Amino acid sequence: MSYDGKRNIRVFPSPQALADAAAKDFQIAACQAQAAEKIFSAALSGGNTPKILFERLALPEVSASIPWDTAHLFWGDERCVPSDHLESNFAMTRRTLLERISIPPENIHRIRGEADPEAEASRYADEITNFLGSDGAPRFDLILLGLGSDGHTASIFPDAVIWEEPTGVCCVAAHPETGQKRISLTLKTINCAAQATFLVTGSSKADVAANILNRSPGHEKYPAAQVELESGSLNWYMDRDAAGVWRP
Ligand code: 6PG
Image 1 (cartoon, rainbow, N blue to C red):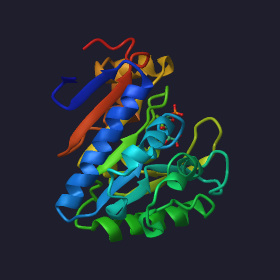
Image 2: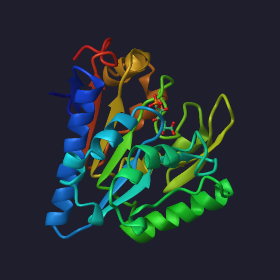
Image 3: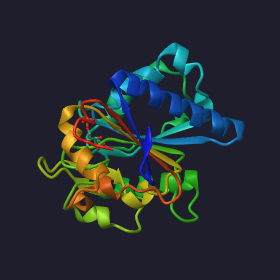
Image 4: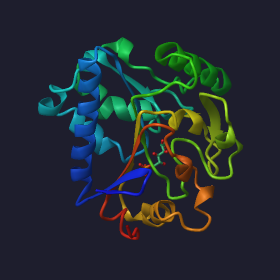
């Protein structure tokens, strides 16, 4: 592991090793919350990368060590599609994790992709603040994040007005190429987390990850580069392919 003053950076020999470490972090954070008699709040990432982590968390020998009855799952973002749609982050999580673990239904805080986007962004923000408290920005115990090859994270895309949104808990976004509407946590909410972990695998992310981690000229334009927790622990977990260009 290396620490650059703001980020704990770890490079793993394989996506499986990365998933093992992220699953261990998840388990530790959930158990620490339980020991403190608190609920554990986690916002999950979408796309393909987290599947390997969710499948790891669902393994009986791993799942048995996680206090799911006090773990509350949210999403960092969701595509505005029905919950059974192929592109739904909830559908992906249901297949790879939720169907395989015993978690109370009330602990699952789905973003309703089928709803009107603006109305849902408002409803989801209320659900978050009602659950995590509203004095200041809501503070998740853990936020999992992905990285797009364009430097986006959650559904905060480069050149989008929303990621300069200073006040909202979440917002409506649109994919720059497809125009697909998304609901996303804002950077403000992400940066209030107690812990956030980027899960980055594959060579397609190597250049953008290196630009961000090395703070190369122009890196500020990447929304993922704007993730710097105000008072939390920020982890960048990469496999060898994703770390191929980065030089510590
Ligand atoms: C989404 C994600 C998005 C994702 C990155 C990486 O809804 O698509 O939240 O931010 O994490 O695009 O996606 P992959 O893991 O599929 O490369």
